[in-house]
Length: 99
Length: 178
Image 1 (spheres, rainbow over the protein chains, first blue to last red):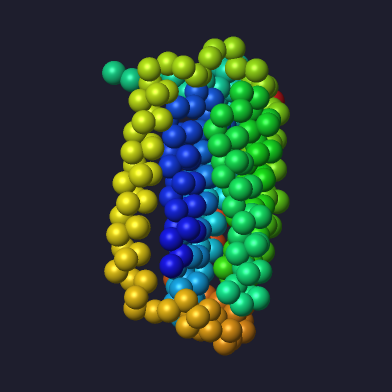
Image 2 (cartoon, chains in turn green, red; image 1 turned 90 degrees about the vertical axis):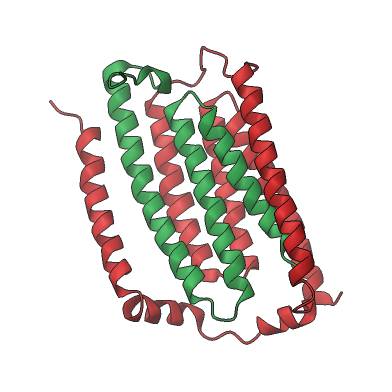
């Protein structure tokens, strides 16, 4: 009965996943990761709307927002420091630790 | 359909094209700044969707945190890493179409699963009963605050510790050392 909103959240996860695996820029990959996390939060809110006891879905969505903010800040700090050293943010140039 | 269902459908029909177009724009604009602003459009439309789904505290939190902090941070990062015109073409390789095919197969698989589950569960509760349940809401924000300090106290404190560690850990590599 709420199939349309579930399809919307699946679409967000799939588009974010596609952007994550085909992006060559580091900041664009982090943007696609935020899309994936937003799709997941939308899924939680849809199901918490369905039940009358809606505290679990909303509180866990609050924690997902918190963790997403923390990892966005940390990931962008890493991208900035890499750009400062190498003057480019291409993902396939980060292969110093590759065997 | 009565009036409340009609208003609900109308609001959803306005907001969902914004999400659909904005998320495609995020992954397919060549200019990274256009992609960052399109992501801001997606966040705003998702926040309006939470208002329509009776989650008003999460809608306000999404608007403050995602649009106000994370999107601003992403726009800053896009402007500092000054790669607005990517010199290499990301498109039309064999990997691009393989990824497109794999993601569309994943999407169609999950949509088929939802369609089959909908046939099972749509008979158990009717549409009017489902809407009637949402009219008796307790004070929602007060309930969330009460549960955060009672049942979910340990994750709450761990999340605050995580934010402190992320704050220190994000300042340190991004600092301009002289």
